[in-house]
Length: 271
Image (cartoon, rainbow, N blue to C red; front, top):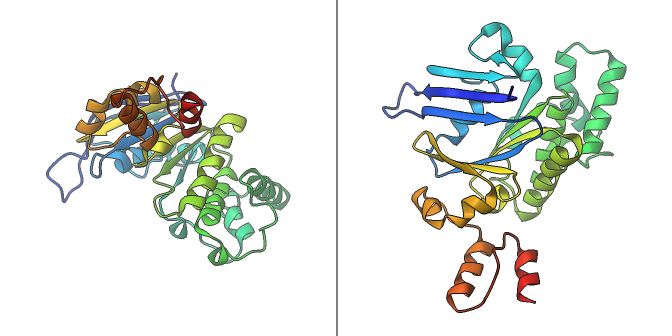
């Protein structure tokens, strides 16, 4: 059984004629890191909200570890298993101290104070924010705020984290901090990661990429498979990562290069 499974999922917003999701089928396995990419309006964020029961399908089914999201009795159990991180960390931070913010979720689970303390400290250590317990969130950088938001989700001990454009509002340093945190959680903690992004370089970090077009998933595959198909990327209104584009240009100039995905791979190949 897949950890997340969508079958024939359709959804429309009341104020829009076109369907935001139009027959989506997708499976996400435990421990997988999948990136969902697509142009603005392709349905990425709507897809993400389906996984955390912020939305339920008009048609079709979404199941999380066998629990159907359409059943109201399953909502809180699903939300404990799938944590959601949003684009703007300021919308997710609710307290005046970092430790109080991270404790918010466990407190709502009515856990004993000793366990809450342990979860808060462990979550902050996991995202590299240990020692910031008494800091006010508004004095943190964007990347630090987003890492605190992720810690607040980790304190709930979910099996899966869904991140909806988590680096869109961050500078390059903040983006790097958050992406390193996400990758480490997946690699070392075996937490399933669903990353919604329009940054192709970020998508390249995933095990698998799903491309969304007009509310449908048009293709899934490894980053190498997806980025190799430049026609598909262009059709989806996207660009290949800069490193891949540069390598393609060099090949057109007669430089013999293997397939590369990262700057390090390109440098080593050229050397």
